[in-house]
Image 1 (cartoon, chains in turn purple, orange):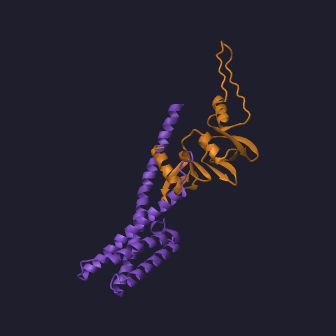
Image 2 (spheres, rainbow over the protein chains, first blue to last red):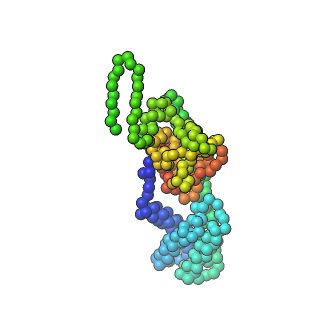
Image 3 (cartoon, rainbow over the protein chains, first blue to last red):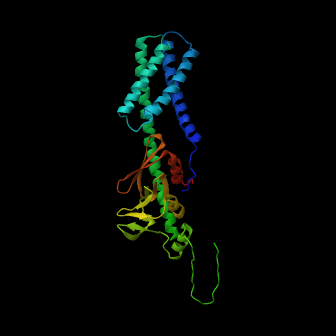
Length: 159
Length: 146
């Protein structure tokens, strides 16, 4: 193989950035869903743009914290102490932003439900990524077997 | 390189190779002529030994020294990782990290890891991580898209 796969610094940054933005979108929609359900339960059928802006920026910053400080825990291979700490801290930060941003009218009970929901979302994301990797394992091993078979055929024909 | 080809009438066929420096190309020509295309020479336990390239599990560079690992031997070879992969015509050798080349034919199983890395289990149970930087190229190799 020739060294033609060297990525430039910008490409590497872009690669990471896209991952973080994808993460921000994923959690933004999950949080927005909880927010909207809570509003509807309270008979309010509108969502505040300011709250949504806080959510998306919060998710974006949280994405950076996850990736750079806590081993990108929702995509990690296993949940160790660092990953659980990251999950706890990110949940706490979301709760603080939601509380002081007044997303749930500073109701402590709803904020606690929100904390449980964020933890649930993180665990779901972790399990989904894990399942995705399991499927990927099967594909990779199948392709490996095919590669070996083809390589053997080419060698046998060459002899 | 100057090439001089002459047709002979009934004389014994002969190829003379003259070189000032042994380059991978010259070495390849000699390998083809001496029908040793699948062999590589190196040192193991102070002795010069040859191993079949097909037997190599992986090649590793440690402190500017290059080692080829087979099931039962560790052979120090003179080439660098770059010159090794350039000189070898076998597609099953793949550069999987800055310091390592694996022989895909000796990979027993693969495991997808986080951050798009791949864990390759080699014969003998050793695990080699294919870094994120090389994983996409590795997937293309397996699919035959390279």
